[in-house]
Image (cartoon, rainbow, N blue to C red):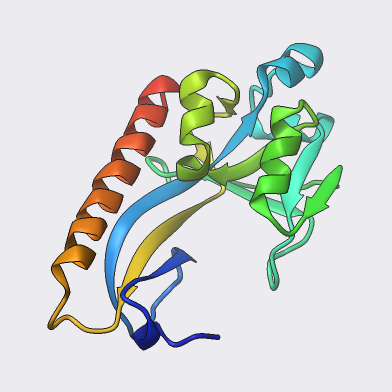
Length: 178
């Protein structure tokens, strides 16, 4: 694994439990939401409560160390509301693009970060289901080799990346009335 010091910027996507000893700038913190294609929802119906997911095709990311069949759902505004569901995924994948393509093609419901599906939510290719329930939070950091001597080109790029990413997620959230 390359060292952070070897690059001007190293992008790191982490979950809420991350506590690294690195110099990093928060690009965006986003929620992991449930999405499906309009065609899938028309064919199978839209889940109204978390328990409805048991009657739907679920597309799941294979994450090392994570429970394989348990989906944990909660609400940010009401942390006392939490649900653990045991689901048998229709598709397991180790890459989010595979799950997104399957969801877009109408294969089922998947969990992903708002940032990854911002453009699909804004265009209506995917729609959010079970709002305001989420399955987690992720933060994208730009790790830097040093706080000192940050080249101007790196600062300009970081500012652009942060502004563009946050604007895309805000647009997506507004579009799906999250």
